[in-house]
Length: 496
Image (cartoon, rainbow, N blue to C red; front, side, top):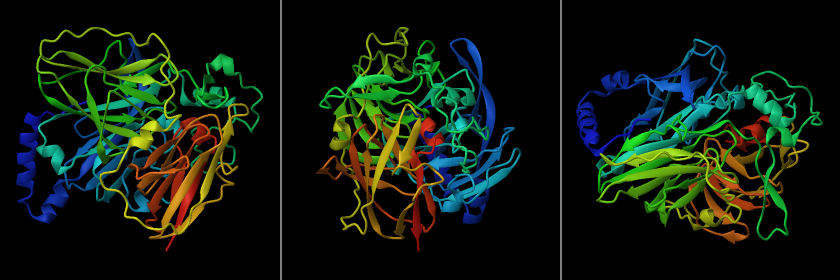
């Protein structure tokens, strides 16, 4: 994953300034970017692994846009399978949102599709909106820089997190779900790439055999245990690498660093631990928040964190670790000044890491720099999040995709959605086409962060406010891929 130093900013800024002198028509013709969905090979603990990816014209994973640059991208599918890409964190018109057949069909092998919309600034990402494809690592960073990013005297580092299995996604999902799939799911066969795995018979599920059902007692819940992890993956990756061979990023003594963390994992929540480096959380899901000091912050699947760090004047080597919740596995990158000794780190901690977000303390502490304007809501729907490990079924208001009842609103209306999780697993809930503000944690009202993905812990309640956008059908779903594949999705239907 490339990094951009402040010295590199000068060259790119000069190039950007020169481009401003060009006529608009020429700029539009010359500024289109290309992106290719393709296969690639990565090394996982000395073993070659064939995965998928989204590569720019420079051969690097993902895209970085300059301030004010449009998302003008030609996406080519060079895979052997039809697929489609969702621009997570962006708010394009509905036709460009990237959901199978809602309304655009998937891209066929060899097909190229043009996208063009105003880019929303911040740390975002892009991924296939078919669970099995996302689990093939068909995902990449999508960073849209702000003017203050260009002028700031700091280096930028991207930390892109995955969970990885040498088994195919079909096999992994079959093990997790006990061989079940959403037989009637017409969302481009979202279950497992069009391969039905039988009906809804979950009787063959062996929790112990697959390492599922990692449990942890929740404080204050009379000993009730929450299920933290569905599956023990073979590896946990930071920028496609494991901690036995991590990326080492050179930083300056006394320098300032902005780490853009993206949790692209299919089913893993992480803590980001900066160790001895004091840090400040300055944005979530691409939206600035009032700085929150700390050395450990959590993020669920689909979420992003922007963390500012200060490198000591004497320099050294500084691991930035991603710790799997409720388990000992960890991954990460190393920041090191020139000449510093980089010590090899074990990929397992000495003890299990705690569960994330059960108390919602982190979410409660976040405050948006630019909150939504105060308005009375037109409607306040409640979405009950339910499900269980055995049988492996996950629901919204008791329904799975296909029998779901949409949340409805008229364009421009203020809507407050309460997510009430009645299950023993956390659910990162993501809404397409909108940014929302967290306005309630439990029964407490707050003026929280602006986000597009909020983690709702077991037995927890989170309320978000939003202004309904374009009249269209927008997906609203859990970003835990096995939960999504088993139907934990509804839609936010906006009418004119």
